[in-house]
Length: 127
Image 1 (cartoon, rainbow, N blue to C red):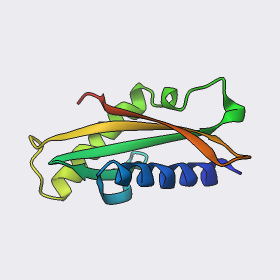
Image 2: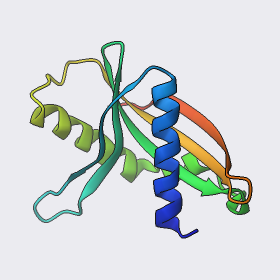
Image 3: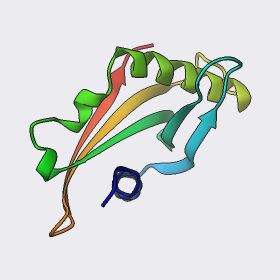
Image 4: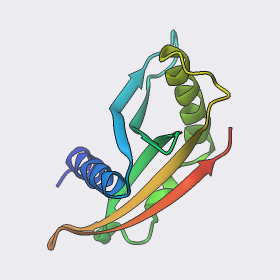
């Protein structure tokens, strides 16, 4: 399975996981382009009990076991996610003072059995 398909598979697992935990999925794959800058994407935007969660999903297969998926969310990615979240809030006319957070969902998949280990890091990135 190539990286794109693995990432899409991980996002589907994450959506199912969030829905099972009582989240309502508001949007998937929110993309924004800034003039002169690279585009950015938020994988999942979900809501639960008045909180909006902007979710970054990182998926790796077990064969890449020397790395943890969540380690791929470096400082640059964190800054971009904060900017994207704030942009989404403004575009949807939701005050920046609202209850929102950025979560990271880490998924390791065994490609043979299709079983996955999921870790949900709530409020993983401070704005």
